[in-house]
Amino acid sequence: MDLNELAHQCYNDNKAWFPEKADDLRHHVLGLAGESGEVANIVKKLDRGSTTLEEVRKELAEELIDVIIYTLSAVAIIGVDPNAIWELKRAKNKRRFAKVVEEKS
Image (cartoon, rainbow, N blue to C red; front, side, top):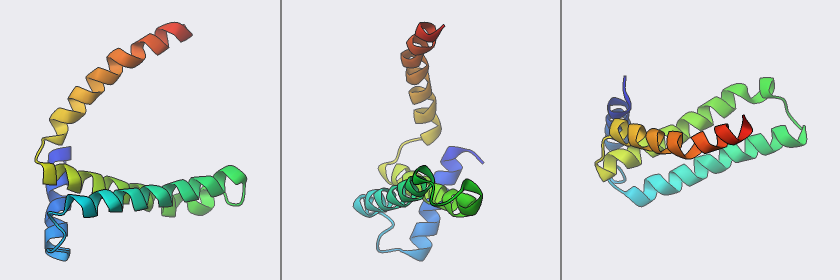
């Protein structure tokens, strides 16, 4: 499944489960921020040593997937092809970070 198919699946799930919020970009961006905060909180606990990756691996993975779901739902709402944007952004980053790789060499 490509990013466009995943984005449409996320959007369609939202339409079925939360029809009143499916087209609400603010809702999805706020959800993205909330899920990102949950990821950060888990990583904070890893960083301070109060948990281990083995203990939180599944929880962290689920929170990261929630970030992807909200992101792809927002992408579907704004009506862009995530595959095309991915390629565009990747090419931009390759040009941008090639300098970093050259400097390290």
